Length: 344
Figure 1 (cartoon, one colour):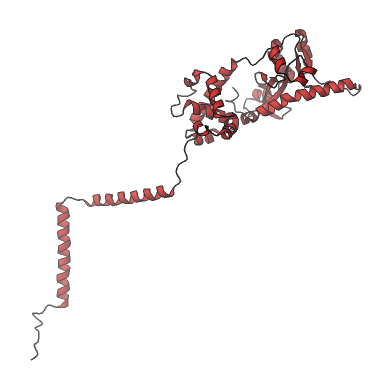
Figure 2 (tube, helix red, strand yellow; figure 1 turned 90 degrees about the vertical axis):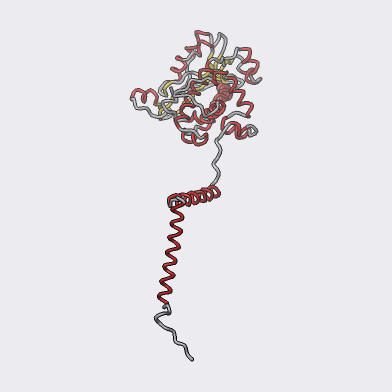
């Protein structure tokens, strides 16, 4: 017997789906009430999610980024003599500290141009100054190398240069005649026994200044640019024994000698050696000081063999001062051009 179902009492598919939807909504309402009862705001859940995401991003970035380069310091060159010579011109870390100690304890109590420098040690300040002298690096580059601002580099540089100039100015570089003769090469002493100093001039480029008078006084017709001129003297043994104040590039070699104290520090019986540009015999004659320079050639007069040989000897010995000046200019700051602050 077939039993028929009463469509009025049997639930339809639509009714079953409706009951399911109602149950689903009721369950979510219950969850919502529980969250509300526990007082957990939606913003907190969002912030926790964002914090976790940020932490993951930071970990990813730290794993892919190159570690920051440490700040340059003199301690990096304790066992690196080659690097020390390249950056400072000094042979070793020991020589560096010897020169630093030679300027005295005042180096640790400097009065800076702008304000006190707290974040760079005295040793590294001196190291930075030597790097500027040797390599002539820009303040921006030095700031990046030492992890400081350009203003701090300028503060250290100007303060230390003026301090070193004051300290070394008090040192007497002019040796007595006995010391000069003792260290003079045998051949030099045999040919020119009374030579006290060999002199020559050198010019250092400077930036063109705005005042017309300064432009005119510093313009060198020989270099065809703005320069300052310095008179340098050395003993026959190769010791730099005299450096004059700096003069404008338009100043002649004779004027530099006239304004310098070189005439006064030479003693009677001494002789100096120079090139033809220093025609200053009349300045030294009253002090009984002889000037050995090559003979001025005149077309009408033929030079004797004796004169030619003498001039060759003078030129061969005088060339040592040119080599010393060239060695000094391995410190690139002397190749300029210097700005107005550096020439004060």
